[in-house]
Length: 418
Image (cartoon, rainbow, N blue to C red; front, side):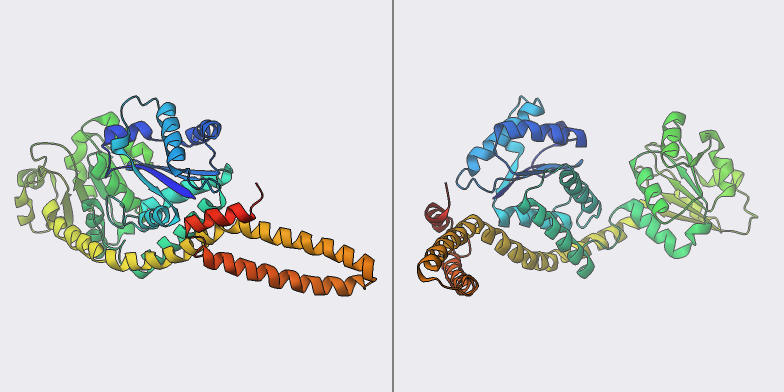
């Protein structure tokens, strides 16, 4: 059996989520603590800015779901030193179908704050491979995560769930790339906040090399630039630097415009035979609209980009039903495997008992009747195969391939060695 404890953006505010964030080094410490309190066979911890999720396995403890959940919660609040009530902020799931449905939807982008976003794929893979490297995986968790990778890849390849820009930063880069050869384009980025950083990341992903950063707070601008090995210039040189670049991007928290038509007419060499593009991603706006009346200057602001973002977001939403149908087909396959695994101990026990019984009879028959050992072995192996196959089919049928939990308990009582 498997279970999930999730503290995510749908159930809890950032003030709670940040208290349960796990560094990789903490995951191993927590597993060691958990192992002393709770009989689990596997643990994968996914921790991002939007969620902390604990996927756990307890294969041989049917009927103890609530007890195990409470033990894990007890260890979690103890490890994170959280003294307030956590229950209202937690979403829980148990059973292979419910847990795998959540994970398959998550890796496909259906559970993300931004529908279809791809970053979650790498985050899930990192969590899985960390657990695998540290031998924290149980067999069901390992199979489930591997199946989720297959599911997510198929969904994203066969739907448009992750296609089209749905942030203004990415929409701006997509719009620019249709009009400019980005490898030959020079950028000046004014501002060092989150929107600027997202835009720079998107540009770097498209192998843009020539980006200059400037920011009113020099230290913040330098830290931003150093993170990506980019050049910086003093904020006071912003206006004069405009002559040397093709595109200027503004994204600051200034409450007043930072550049006007008069500034351009003073500082920009209008005799230069090239177009200059201004992109204003700020709210309130950093650039006066009237600069676009100057002949070779274009302006894109956040309103120009919102239509693209909204169109793409609606397209992604329209892909949810199609994506879920694909996910359902993968879920059925995994659920069949998971449920049949519940019968595995009983099946092994049955086969072992039959084998011992046949071997004992072979020895007795061989000694009493002086029958050729090899010939007897062949005959008895046939009996073993037929008898064990017959019984295995019967218990699969009786338990609905492991789905009928009541039947499963009876089968385990009869056939399992205690």
